[in-house]
Image (cartoon, rainbow, N blue to C red; front, side):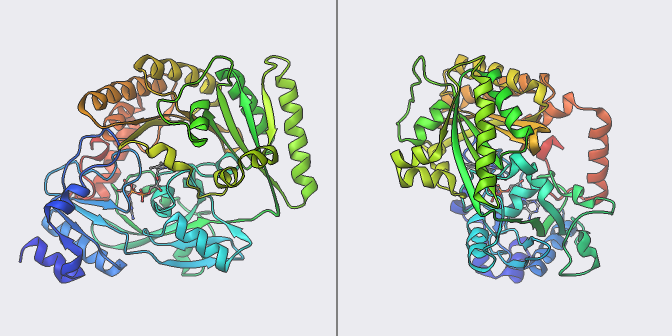
Length: 474
Ligand SMILES: Cc1cc2nc3c(=O)[nH]c(=O)nc-3n(C[C@H](O)[C@H](O)[C@H](O)COP(=O)(O)OP(=O)(O)OC[C@H]3O[C@@H](n4cnc5c(N)ncnc54)[C@H](O)[C@@H]3O)c2cc1C
């Protein structure tokens, strides 16, 4: 029996395709990473179906690429080898369990931020998940595995830290669990005290197996939420002020953006100009309290920090969101209610990319000013985006480039991103959602023992090398 026939016997004819149109659709994403077509696409609906697919692939040495919506902005679902089968997990879309008392949700890969938000609003309104700037139709599970950043990350860290446990199918076909649910269902409260085997899947970009369920932490919704816009000048003064605010644990989240992104949100069409005397950065600050007084007190403290900062740069400015809402009405509301449609400003063209990293706070300001010079040298719109992470244990920054995908621009984007990454690596920053080219550079700069361990674990889990071969250049 051919591979196609075997897959059809598992999922049905409707959910397997080797048609040109499907192969094309799954061959690229918005980034500059080179496209490559899979040989086939299959869409399982259940863990059992996926397990059968993996068993066949392991026996017949068929490369598999996990896919949910392909919106990772890292070229991560583009096959790297010939004859790969893309496994689209959208149909596995059950919210398996929400535990109100231990505050977690267990979801399958196809559950999106939009699904989860709607479900919680309807069934568990006192709880919230944390939502990214990403489109609401992207996968909660994939985002958590990619260790992304969402709207509680300033307070609570990268999404990998929100994972309580998971269920996965190993490349050899066995179903395993990691975290407290090794004791049974209804018990996904955490990862400790245990050998932390979540780490065999978190950050692996689908190179170690298929995660079929993930338990993620939910948080109590605070009664009172306030927002403010902070306008700042200069890279180091901006990062220093954000560090002070984040470290005092006053804010749930901070989204700091080049002024050009703020202008895009206001509807200015490309190319966006920033004029002399305008602030360099606009930051959306979100803070909350159980009573109004708590939120107000946090806001007052932020005001004193900004006042202090004005001693060095008198133009730093804090604006209460009420003032912005009065001016912009529902538009202002849509920016603070995540998952929001603010992502649309990034998708103006068919091309979108970034070099994003996590970095030591001491290098944050330097990374921003050095990166800015590189982007300006290449003549792209300046679209820096940064977030204090985990109460300022580390910082995030990225330089976003939206671009039309003609050959000359794609080439220019490649050079710019490479220079940005080289600069970031020289500051010991770690790139996230690394495309293959970036992962190779990271490995050249990283401790060789780490790279060796990575290869050894991979070989142990996947002796026939079927999971996403070529990713990370491995
Ligand atoms: C405009 C825009 C804004 C964005 N903003 C943010 C942001 O603010 N924060 C943020 O973190 N991200 C952001 N992203 C990135 C992205 O949307 C998220 O990381 C997203 O949730 C990934 O989901 P996906 O469905 O696109 O996953 P995919 O791209 O389909 O998959 C991502 C990776 O996970 C692997 N994978 C998928 N499913 C499994 C599985 N079951 N088991 C093992 N491996 C698997 C894939 O092989 C791939 O390596 C943004 C993207 C866009 C387009």
